Image (cartoon, rainbow, N blue to C red):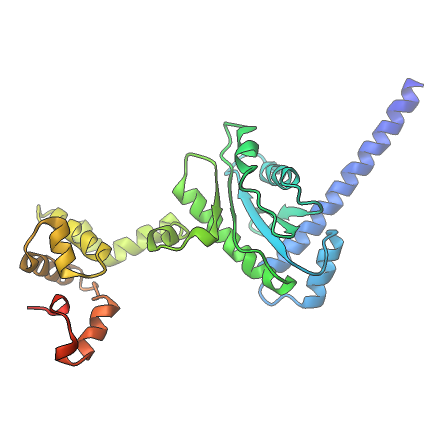
Length: 273
């Protein structure tokens, strides 16, 4: 009897394993369609049906990454988060670049359960990302792009902690830049400010400080001077030095437009001495 029970349980386990493998394969095929540009609506609808998802929206796309840990860990964590959030049927798989992703029906929010899933394995960093819900199947590719951007933002914002990024919260310049890979930002800063960053002159630090304040003040000479407790002419001189060293600094569009306006309509703040 024990042998017969063990045989039955073995067949059940084998059936479940085949079903999970088929589900992951169907999800991987859906991910490949979403990652490739110009997916045909018929192919997309067939892939959604193969994953047990409705062919009508809305949908939520979520991405996850656990770094260079064992294969399948990110997909397992993502499946657990989706299940805890009560998403119902979901497609959980990997994109062609091996990033774990999930497509769930409805506007399911996993932000509340994300810390719970991340706490299950404290030695593993669980980063994720999601954006706005996709109203219809053709919008899934855009939702995936937002989720991937939010995932990159989460990695850069909290490299030493688990975090779920939300693309809809990337509304400021600083938060938006967190979605750009750090390598790209480093190359860009070196390209634009390289001569100033590499300068050994003791005046380089004040110039960088003035430039940072000038940009934070939206190119306002007066507010920059007030923030740094300097004279306006000193701010002008330092920005001119930055322009001379980098040959790349451009004045804000607001000032460019102001220079094209008649002289009587320009504020004294936007005039160069």
